[in-house]
Length: 121
Image 1: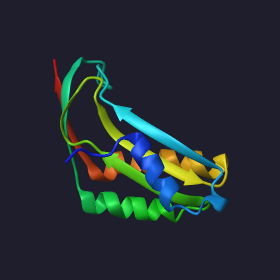
Image 2 (image 1 turned 30 degrees about the vertical axis):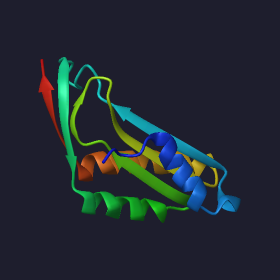
Image 3 (image 1 turned 135 degrees about the horizontal axis):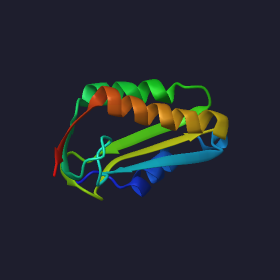
């Protein structure tokens, strides 16, 4: 089954959230870089996740101050340079709450739930 696209996550939030409390939705679209953090060329990434941890993180982030909704999707398996990997959408009241929640969500998902291995050239 294909994972939802970023605009699908945004629409899902719009359909379910209490929009009288929403002042903005911010999004993240992670892609496979052509160069690793160490500066070496990347051929592909193999991606998987612990979905129990993934869902726990999303639930915790939904409880952050000013946050109305958080949703995310991970495209698992072999992903090549330029391929989408992770979509995250966060809706909330004001940018001082929403931008930090997006960054914290992405960082926690990548650190705690996502499992990846790089194939370098």
